[in-house]
Length: 310
Image (cartoon, rainbow, N blue to C red; front, side, top):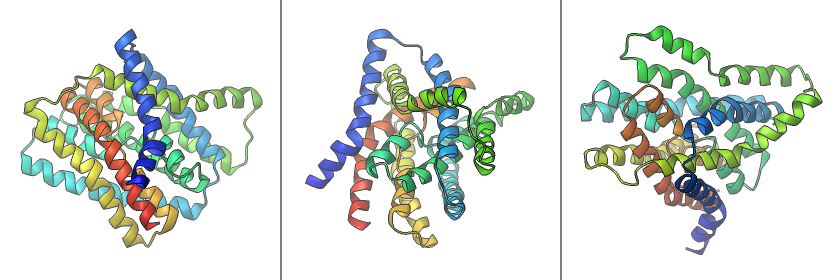
């Protein structure tokens, strides 16, 4: 129990405190979440993805291994959630909302700080988390946008929105510049460092502000669906990840980093998509709130069990 409490206090609580500060700021000042979201979405997130991909040495073998894991993980998650939505007989809008709440997880403003705390800033595990964050940035900005709009007629506008996502361009740019060893000029590197350094704090505060604007209760009509979403994301997620790393023969810190990366709560992307495209906003918000709250215990439990195994 002492080890469990140590993990809770040193790995999870620092993030929880930052999120709580964001909640308090929202309650006192009623901050504009759309402005904060746009800062994260169009500036901070692309900047930190570019900086981390450009600066972090990741072996080609590791890239292939992580990407294979990610594809297998997403496919298995999709199969599981598809079985659930069919058994529940959801409407088209609810189907996409449930899929998004499970498939899109908070690998950036929750996953990066968690990785840094859980693995004491280990560069190898950070590289793994960066790759997962990269893919989790691409999926909501492509498939996610398509998913919430697939039942609508105006697909031209959907593709226009997808093409306008900056993360689509910064990922290949970072790989190209790193691959050809092109140096970043000082006048660009300095502001890039400033923006990247601000990412973790701003991301956690934005998450807190978002949670502060939500109703801290689960509607009776959505209680079962929100519970299902939480179980699939926080329990089935790391279990599926564990199965995959075992089947792939991945061990040690690499396996632990991949499992931890899969144990984080539902991403704010699912809420942003729901709000932007008017798709089950109440369910999306409550799923993020509940999964983030419960993750304080479930993520601690996952790290605790991995500490025993690794």
